[in-house]
Length: 235
Image (cartoon, rainbow, N blue to C red):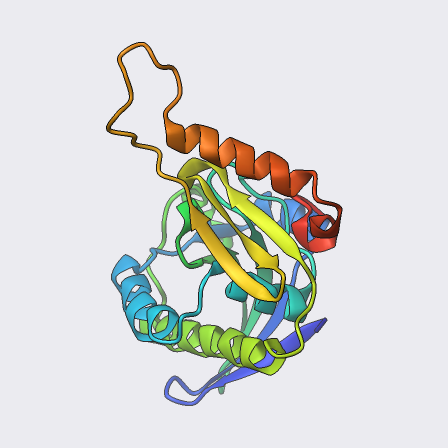
């Protein structure tokens, strides 16, 4: 597990230091002077097409890479997500150093969303609960895109280095989307349980997808080899 790492963003002429936050550090930061920066959903789709789909870099493989590099995840919404990692970013340019936050989570079973948080000045604190525009002289929109490409590439490279020796059975779930994924019997798996059964009668309370998901979940929860830190819902 790495305490911190560095990315050199050559196109943006920035150096970014990345440190994983503990739950306690993250809780303190939520009460401090940080506000979210507008998310670029279109670029998330570009990453999905050019990296995640192209290299078959699925949720269990992404999580295995994150866990290998950064250890246990942070607390999160355990209905819509299966993990969340929180980081402190130190942005260094030729003239100054800036502190940002980064949240990385797999909302609704999608590849990880990147949410950046900018540290506000004293005269901006009334904007804490509102999305902010990127500041070109600190961490521009283009620099954030470059960072995301580096980060996802870093995780993919990590997975490539461990895939032939990875042996730890685990499972994780996204209840919102009826997804169970993990590693079992030498294979990474990702199972989706249909929530819309067209044969469901008017008086049926559950569709077959619900039942199949819950049955599979109980089976994994009761399998001793699948238990452990990687399968734990929280730190």
